Image (cartoon, rainbow, N blue to C red; front, side, top):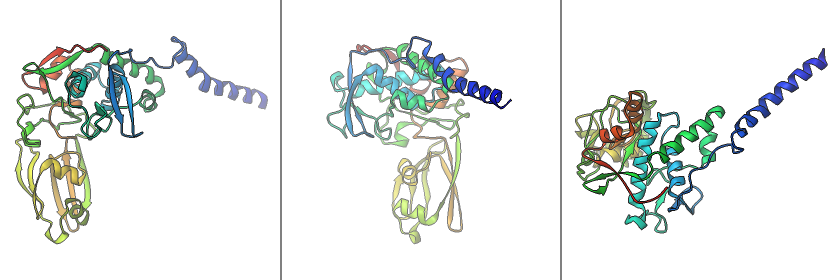
Length: 318
């Protein structure tokens, strides 16, 4: 009896460990397909390894889409992300007249999401996905890049500043209300599509001492007063007790998810409640997925979040 039980356990172990690998390898011998070969090479500064890497544009864009948008999103949302990421990248590439990465003069672009765009290796991306989804997710991202090949967003014949964010929280913002420049295609639009985002709203508690330290104000002088908000509720300007700063800087100093924020002060603590995630300008990524799931295609999604634009083709192969 014990021998039979041992044999059954051994067979089960083999099935669990060996069979999944055989299933994946049965399709052509490769665990996952690679991005299409792209004759155009992009100089990318990897901020984690501190090295300059040259790679085909298609390979780079696949890594950006995998890093910037959840792979479980609808393929039309992933296509919209691919078009926007391509626009952002081509506008940076020196060979196409772009200015390159100002932090790394030898590079066209870097992988630091706080400065350029996030990017990930295929192996790093798939390691975060469920095993039986890895192949289908990677193919979906490749499809998003390949089926939008050469497509970029333009305004009056010029590449746009293709900014995007995770979750607008119901309404995107005018560029000048978050930064300083008024850009005609970065206009506030209503968005009823991003409510499924896990970061649609968030509440965090920070001690008054920490708030004062992060804002660079002595605790005894700390006095947070909103000077101006957008129509949707994002802070444009706020006083700290010592200075007036922009809402984006306020958000960044306190490491909040959004400048659409309210708070309560109770004794020695502040409780901050944010709506949305990111700066709120341009493409709302969770909104893009919400639109796609209601039947909108990538071009319709892009036209929703950027005003008066065109989707054109650029002469760079992928």
